[in-house]
Amino acid sequence: MRLDVVIPTYNRATLLARTCESLLAADRPDGLDVWVTVVDNRSTDATRAVVNSFMPRFDGRLQYVYESKAGRSHALNAGIASTAGDLVGMIDDDEEIDRQWYTIIAAAFADPSVDFIGGPYVPRWESDRPAWFGNADRAAVGWVDSGPDIQPYGPNFDGILMGGNAVVRRRALERAGAYSGDLGRSSEGRLLACEDRDMYDRLLATGARGFYRPDLVIHHYVAPERLTKSYFRRWSFWHGVSLGLLDRRRPEPVPYVFGVPRYMIGLAVRAAGDTLRRLFRSGPARTFKNELAWWDLVGFFYGKHVFRP
Image (tube, rainbow, N blue to C red; front, top):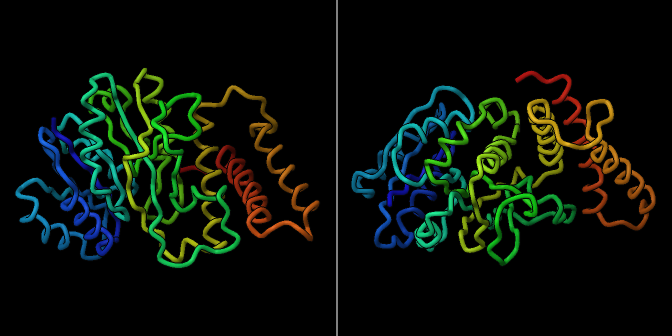
């Protein structure tokens, strides 16, 4: 069984080196042939030199691919197209895999009925977590934890398959189709972020069978500049924009008001009411969480009715 690990990257040469070190340090079980593809998405730093420096240590199983079209989705599609393994693993350039990552993959896909797996993202903090950062805001920094149990993905799972820690059978990807280039983040600075949700929905729609594995762990670097309120506001706004774009393509089976799901408006109104009621006694985390609900709502409306990718 061959695993192709695809890493899209943009101007993170130093972090990419740590990612590559973790791929080399992880235990490799018998019967799993591991190859790595780094997709350089128009980097202007030392990315190419870093990849070249690691090539001798991978014994011919590391390749460099350049993708000139900006955007994580385009980079992922280029990496997937340039590989041929039975399994495609996807991680980001600011992550390090756990030592047992390959071992868990080999065990999971020993079952031929399993089409995809995902797992938790454990934060690697570069600075202290601020007091206003509550558990409800974890997605903004890529902190994923869906509990200690193996769970099937699907309607009853509270979350989605995140593309920074995902392994998918190639045949399942071929049925689902390519990543959507208009939904993912690009190097232009727009924090669009729904390409993973779109792919997850399409995998399920084809009948693919997947599992959340709490033991499939990656360690995710959280830069200090992402622990600011301004970043969280930007992230929430563009997350809303992404959901609005996705809703144009695939509306939800729920009531709408002015083209926005009624439940989103309800969440924002209740958040405002909660803030007013607790004006002098709520903690900073809850107050800021309530504010972010409005950034999500405004972003959704903009993405649904105004924004053109």
